[in-house]
Amino acid sequence: PGCFNVFEMSVRAVLGQQITVKAASTLAARLVAVYGTQVQTGIEGLTHSFPAPAAILALGENISEHLGKLGIISARANTIYQLARVLADEKNDFGFCGNPEEEMQKLQAIRGIGSWTAQYIAMRAMGWPDAFLPTDAGIKKALPDHTPKELQVLSEAWRPWRSYATVNLWNTL
Image (tube, rainbow, N blue to C red):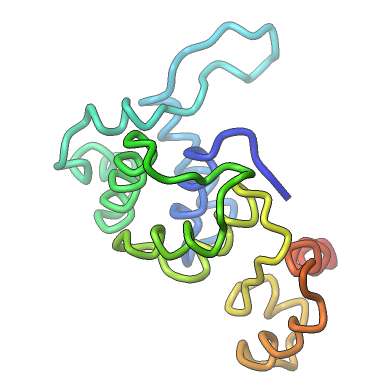
């Protein structure tokens, strides 16, 4: 599991909290269309790159006024702004060489980022092979007869490869 752009993937994780993947994709597309950078690629449909953290920070602290017009609720807009600030400061290492458990603690210090989002970012952005999301809707759907607590216990047998188990469970849906 990995990603090309840490900020984009992290924002998509925030946008996807408690809504469908399709709805989160719609919000991300709106964000890119309005605040992304126009690019010439020769690839049909690829017209913009995801906005950089600096572009989001340039909108100012009343970010919810800007992103609210796109359908992004205030709490998520503020979380996106804080993520942009953290990534622009370059004090965190969300890349492949970072310490996932340490960086997840830093992520969870951002209002609006809980365990699910931090684990997901660690899995995708940091390539951490041992992330597990016991409260994830897809995981619960793939293993419906288990509570999140039971799923956490079950996942211990998959260490240190729980990210791969997560992706495989999603692929069963």
